[in-house]
Length: 374
Image 1 (tube, rainbow, N blue to C red):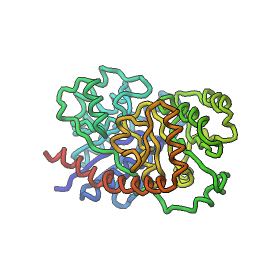
Image 2: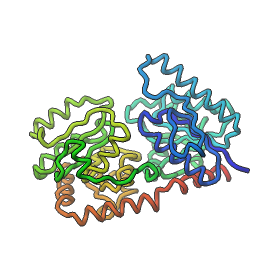
Image 3: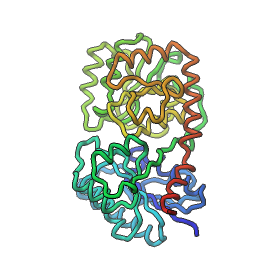
Image 4: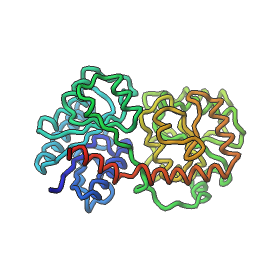
């Protein structure tokens, strides 16, 4: 009997989760399952995947209206998933608070089997409620999905899980389905107002303390002046004036290109194709979508040697790793990278190979099907 998988994605287009959810849905379709995505977008393969954009995208409504709209969308999605007899409902979880408790409880009240993807085992906003975590993971979730061994270990150490066997490691996939044809880099740089022959580092994504932009700016002060930095993204519970002070302190005004705002998909594509390297100087991460996105574009990556990053990157083969929070070591890796064009080509090629062979959504979909088939 054909299985039906429902993905309830309350984030979707607002933070790039549309790529994740639509790629996962495509994996299920490839595995001969039916799949419905309840979110705020219509994504790839819409002729095969059923998209129901019940959730709001960017909205300026007040908090009470937002909450009502969110709960209404969750109820509608759960009702529809029940009506089509979904074998599994997949939910994305980034924090444990009263809102996410309701988000997980509603489909459970409809009698649906739930797999909760724990993207951030502990919220970067430090607003997790331990009691709510316990209820979500032990009372509401039939399965808890984490993306790597580091998240698995952290979850078991930080939260009492009554049935550890319900925790399943399933990888976060790559983004090859969403990467367009590679454009001419010089033409892109002209369009973006960049030097055609310049050397550019990309820092992309939400700007927050744990992402370590300050570490990268300190490293910029220790590398040749012809290397420039593109900062692209919006601050999240962070004040960019702090980074402006560092830019002034290190006299980097002429070496930093600031794009401090929301970056849409088209512009993000241009940045990933125009930069020479993507640097992820994170202090902590459970899984980086930006890392996998860069590798999917053939953009070499230099990342801090956090456990989650080390599960993907092999230093000198498909990326470069530096000692976490060590700006001197990051500066050294940047010097090595920009002085060795062969190394950059090898990393780019092997990064694409890693995504293609180890982070495909078809295999990921099989893993989900396996957990509901046993």
